[in-house]
Structure formats: C-alpha cells, structure tokens
Amino acid sequence: MIIRSLKVTNFRNYDKFNITLGSKMNIFIGDNASGKTNVLESIAILGLTKSFRDGLDCDVIKFNRKKAIIEGRVLNNKQIKDLKIELLDKEKDIYVNSKKIKRYADYISNLNIVVFAPNDLEIIKGSPSIRRNLLNMTLSQISYSYLVTYNLYNKILKTRNEYLKILFTNSIADKAYLDVLTEQLVDKAVLIYQERYKYLSRINDYISNIYNNITENNKVIKILYKPNIVIDSYDEESIRKSLVDTYKKNYRRELSSGMTLFGPHRDDFCFLMDDNTDMKVYASQGQQKCAVLSYKLSSIPIFKDNNGTNPVLLLDDIFSELDLNKRNKLLKYVSKDIQSIITTTDLKNISKKTLNDAVIFKVSSGKIERS
Ligand SMILES: Nc1ncnc2c1ncn2[C@@H]1O[C@H](COP(=O)(O)OP(=O)(O)OP(=O)(O)O)[C@@H](O)[C@H]1O
Ligand SMILES: [Mg+2]
Image 1: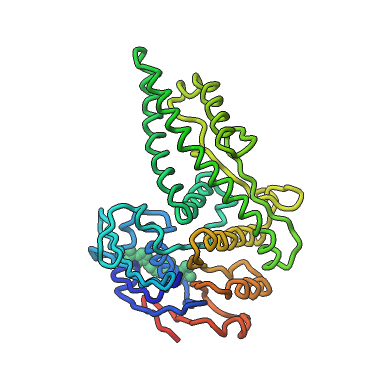
Image 2: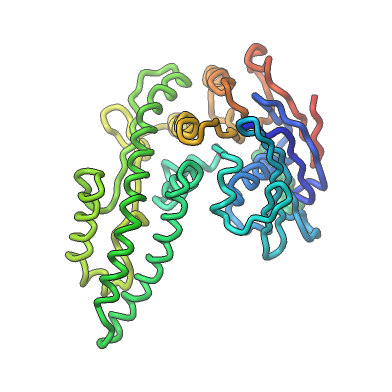
C-alpha cells in the first residue's frame, strides 16, 4: 500500500497542509513541537480511525475549530481509493470514495498501518492491556474474522459479567442462562486464542533475525504467549475443553467477584532474550527499544502474506536512544520495498546512501515544506 497524498484541515497545530508523499522513505525533520508526530498521527487515524495517542478523538481538532478533516489517496494493488475521516466534537464520519461507511469493520482494511511511537516501550514495560491492544490493532487489520469475532466476544463478555452480578445477588435467577452465555463466549474465544497464537508464533519466525540485523548482535529474542488458562494445544477441541473446565471449576470464584476471570480478555505475552530472561526485568532501554522495533517490523511480512500488500510503516522519533550504527542499520532495513514515514529532529551522521531514495520534508511550527 502506498499513500500518494495526504491533506489535513484543522488538525492539531495545522490549519491545512496538502502533501504528495514518496513511495519509499519519507522523512519529516523539525524541532520539538513543530508538528512531526501530528503528521504521523493523522495517517494513523486515516488507517485505524483511532489515534495512537491517549485521549479523545476530538482532541485532534485544532483549538477553537469545529471539525478536523484528514484525507488521503491510497494506492493498493493498482487500485486508487480516496479515504476521508471527519472528526467533530462527538462524532466521527468515515468515507471511502465519498461514500459514507457506517461500520468500522467495513473500513479498516483500506489502509494498513504499522506504527512505532516512543511510548511503545510500554509494550515491554507496561501493563498487559497495552500488549492486548497492540495484538488487537494488528490482528484486526490482517483478519476480518478476528475483528468481527473480537467485537462479538466483548459484547458477550459484558452481558456475562452483568449476569454474574445478577446471579450473585438474586437467588431466583436462573443459572441456565449463564451456561448459554458461557457457551457463546467459549465459541468466540477459540478463534481469538488461535489467531493470537498463530500470529505470535509467526512473529517469532522473524524477530531475532531483525533484531540482530539492527543491533549487529547474536541474540535470540522470543515472544512468549501467556493466556491465563492452561492450553496444551491450540486445536479447537483442546481450547474449548480447557475453557469449559476452567469456567466449571471457577464458577463460585467468578460468581463472588461478579466478573469473568478467564479468557482472552486476560491474555498477556512477554519478550524473552537468550536464556529466557524477561526483557522487562533485564534488558537495557536501548535493547527494549530495538526489541519493540523488531516486533513491529516482524509484522510486515505477515501483513504481506495475509493481505497481499505491505502496510505503510510509521516510525516516530526512532533515532533517540539509538547509537549511530543502529540508526543507519535501521534505516537500511526500512528502505526496502515499503513506504515508510519517519520523523526526526535531525539527520546528523545518517549515511547519504541510505537517504538516496528518501523524500525529505521540513516541518516548522505548523508548516510543511518538501525539500
Ligand atoms: N488540538 C490542538 N490544537 C492546536 N495545537 C495542538 C493541538 N494538539 C496539539 N497541539 C500542538 O501541536 C504541536 C506539535 O506537536 P507534535 O507532537 O506534532 O510535535 P513534534 O514535532 O512531534 O515534537 P517532538 O520533537 O517534541 O516530538 C505542539 O506544540 C502541541 O501543543
Ligand atoms: Mg513528536
């Protein structure tokens, strides 16, 4: 996939910009607070309909304006599509070729995005929900059935939690309905476990190689998937049996806590290095950054296999904390057959050769100039 052009109106610190992007590497250079991350954010929203930053959708609207608009022309398998997202105070409208799209699930495949932002170090250091969100963001883009199933799972989960509370307080409530909900939940959970397991196993096919390429090291990096039920094998029957047994065994516990304590909504995974040491505890800041970057880059061939096309790669402020050698290695790695959009405050000591194909944009206080 390639974003041909990007136009934003009343977005963050921009009144308006309209730029044509290069089909390979694009580098946005500017001082702090000039608006570099905002450019990446607008592209991420165009792909995912949501920002990678915390906060509300409407936070992106320029101060004292009513509506922010992001428009992009995307080329995918020789087909051009015009995407548009309008963000209002309490509303978000999505269009493909000027036609309004009602369901998020029907939009999400139009622009595939892999994004690395500085606070992504939280993927290693932070809470499990950060890692689950990351899994959902990627799997929703590469598997339509995952996206639909995951949404249904959450709906059933909510109802099951509510009914557990009713069962606990109301002695005449019927347990049979809980069993129906449990059955429905298990039905959806199976695919979520399978897709997550399959995806993380595939990440493991690439991650060490990419890590060692960037760092010139010889490390083994591994992602360990950690569901909160015991799963011996990821075939449908085994997962189903394990879940059903777990819910049976823990009925009283779930009842008294008034919520569903087991299932993919409690999943986690961790990053292991060499002798299975947890990178959260033992790895340096730079090692963590390279591991997360490698994780993100590992998803690119998976996108390619599943969707038949490369995603657009967004890398925010990637050079900080990386020594010079790694900066050049990383750029060299990225400059392959993929459109990337990179932000940095400077290009000091970046080799001219790597920058040959790159289009450079200068950003200064809400203005963008292609140089
Ligand atoms: N809704 C908004 N309206 C107007 N300005 C905003 C809005 N939201 C954020 N800004 C401003 O946008 C500016 C640029 O932010 P951005 O995060 O893109 O900077 P940056 O170039 O990535 O800086 P850094 O190098 O420090 O990461 C900031 O000064 C911020 O205050
Ligand atoms: Mg920034």
